[in-house]
Image (cartoon, rainbow, N blue to C red; front, side, top):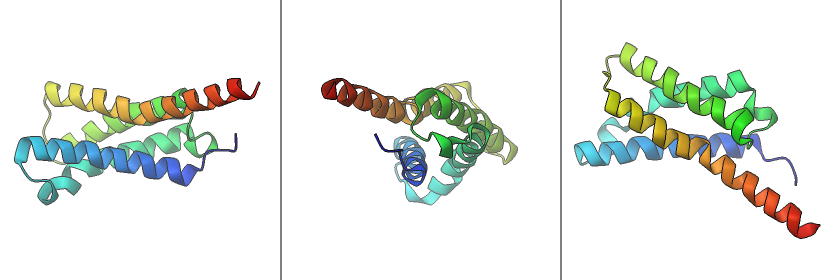
Length: 124
């Protein structure tokens, strides 16, 4: 398999974090746009820190090497930035954030790894 494009991986991460924020806005506020950027930016910044810490551009679709680090830092740094900028903290929000971003940021990478593994078996 050719190397997974880093820019595509970063775009997928960005879109999924925005989807996470949009779902939360829709469920809790009834509308998405007014506060979407305010909700999403700390987690986008946390994911960017995760990209840097894991050097994800080297293996952007690896679930453990890149996905786990990006996920953990998106959640931890994102929550820290959220609290530092007056967004508040609730354990329920933290747990939902950790679960959903884990499923999103590690999940798509796990699916890619599974597809690659299945294709490799089919070729052999």
